[in-house]
Picture 1 (cartoon, rainbow, N blue to C red):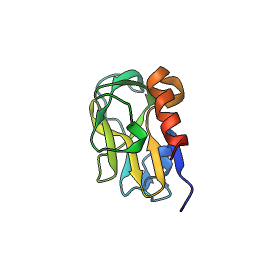
Picture 2 (cartoon, rainbow, N blue to C red):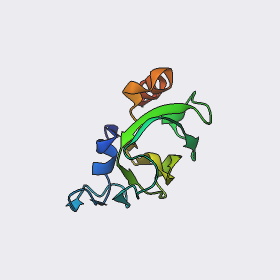
Picture 3 (cartoon, rainbow, N blue to C red):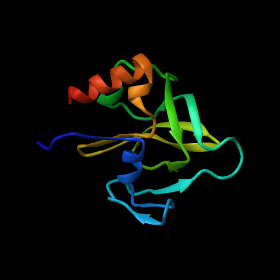
Picture 4 (spheres, rainbow, N blue to C red):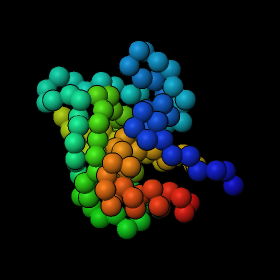
Length: 126
């Protein structure tokens, strides 16, 4: 059994293949590039947004559909087979991802009140 790992915000982005931020190769755990939000709405994406949970996952035990979490980011991970929750801000993106023992959230659970607290507790119980 391998130790679960949780990447938060930039941590999720570092687990992807490549980032447009500085044209940087990343760890490649998730087979998706990190891209900068296109011009449009206000960037960075900062504030509360709802999650759409896409896959049953122990990270989201006790979390309701459309619960709000807190985001602060200018770059996003696209949708992939590893996406377990998404958010829509300018375009749909991966709000949370999971592959093997790697879990990641683009949002900040530590700033997401009781919803974030529950997600962190769920992770600690893995």
